[in-house]
Image 1 (tube, rainbow, N blue to C red):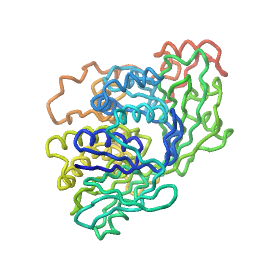
Image 2 (image 1 turned 90 degrees about the horizontal axis):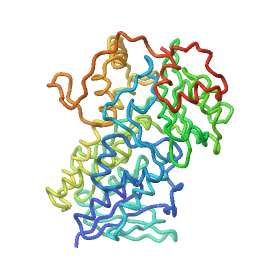
Image 3 (image 1 turned 120 degrees about the horizontal axis):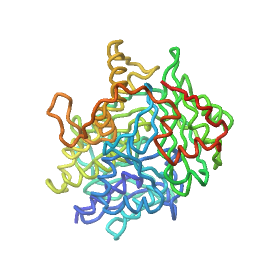
Image 4 (image 1 turned 180 degrees about the vertical axis):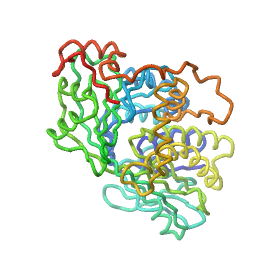
Amino acid sequence: MTKAVVLGGGFAGVLVARVLSGHVDEVTVVEGGRYPVGPGPRPGLPQAYHSHVLVTAGAEALETLLPGTLDALLDRGAHRRGLPEGALILSADGWFRRHETGAFLVSCSRWLMDHVVRQRALTGGAVSVRDGTRVLGLAGDAARITGVVVAGEDGAGETLHADLVVDATGRRSRAGRWLAALGAAGVEEEVVDPGLAYSTRIYRAPADLTAGIPAIMLHPRPENGLPGYGATLLPVEDGRWIVTLTGTRAATPPADEQGFTECAHALRSPVVAELLAAAEPLGGVRPYRATANRRRYYERGPRPEGFLVVGDALTAVNPVYSHGMSVALLSAVRLDLELARHGAGPAVLPALQAAVAEVASASWRMATEQDRVRPGTQALASAAAHRMRARMSRAVLTSPPLMTRLFRSQTLVPVPSPATAADPSLPRGPSVADRPPLGTDEAVAQFPGLAEWWFSGRRSHPSTGEESRDD
C-alpha cells in the first residue's frame, strides 16, 4: 500500500491531496489549525483578509481538476470580470478602453474560495485530515524521506510513515531546516523585495451598485521621484467590496480608518474615493507587509527521494500579481499529468519537483521583472530600459492586439513571443492611437451600471462636466 502525507491543508495542500488520491492508496493531510464549518477565517492565513482572485489560466485549471467548481463559486456570489472588458483600469499612462481579450479574473473572498474548493477536493473519503496537528520535522535521511514527525494538541510526538511527503505549508515553510536536520544539502533561495505594502478594508456596497460594477484598478505613478499609491476595488460575495490600497516603504498605505480614507482621496483618480464615500465600512483596516518574491530552488542539486515542495513553499510572488492560487492549480494539473506518466514511486519525486518548478517559472519571471525596477529595489534597470518600458506601456493602450497579449500574459495564458508567427487566436483590431486619452468621466462612461450612478448626482462630488485626464 502506497501512502502519501501532505503538510499543510490550505489551498495548495488540498489540491495536491486530491491529485495524489488518484495515484496512491492512502493520503493524509496534516493541518495545524482547524477548518471552519463554513467560509470563514482559518488560523495561519493572515493574508485571507485581502484581495484574492483566480486569473484565466487558474480558473481553467480549476475546471480541469474539479469540474463544476467555477459555477459553484459563481452561484455562491463570486464575480467574473473580463480584462479589460469588465474592468476599469488606470495604468501609469492612462485609462484602458474596454476590449474583449479572452482574459478574465474571478473574485470572491479567500474564505469562500477555500471553503468551496476544500469541500470538493476532500469529498468522497479518499483523503483523511489530521487537523490540530503540528509538523516537527521529517523522518528518514539525506537519501530518502520516510515520513513526518508530528505532534497533536497534547504535545505528544508521533511519526507518520509515508512513501511520499509533500510540503504545502506556504511562505513560512521550514522544509529547508527539516532537510538540513537530516544532513541533506542546503537549498538555494532568491528574494526580490520591492518593498510593497498594502492595506485593505471591506465595505457593504450601495444597493444600486451591487450588480454589474466593474473591477477597478488604479495603478500608481511616481511623481517628482516619489512613488505613488495604487488601489483595487473588487466585488465579492454578499454585496460587498474588498478595497486594497498599495504603496511602497516610501509611501506606505495607512492602517487607520481616517488615514485609509484620506489616502483614497489622494489617488490619481477620484473613482475609488467616491465609491467608498457611498459604501458602508465593515470592520477596520488590515495592513499586510510580507510581499517579497521568494524562490526556493528545490529542483537544483541532489534531493532525498520521496519529498516534494509545492505552492508558496516553493515559489511565492508578490501578492499584487494575484498569481498564487492560480499557480497552485496549474502545478496540481501538471503533477497529475506527471504522476500518470511516471507513477508515484518515491524515486520519481525529484523529477516531479523540476516539473512543478517549471510551472511556477512564468509567474516568477513576470513578477520579478516588474519588481526589480520598482523604486527602492536593489537592481534598477538602465535608463534605456525604462524608456522602452514606458513606450510599450503607452502603446498597449492604443493597440488591441498588444492589449490582448498583455492581459493574457498577466493571467498566465501562454502567448507567442513577438518574434514568432502570429497566433491566429489573438483578436485583431485597428490601432486607436488617433483617439485622445480618456478622462475619468469618459472611462467610467464605458460601464453603464457605474456610469448611471456616477452621473446621477448621488456621489459626494458630482461631475462638473469637466473631465480630469489622469494621464
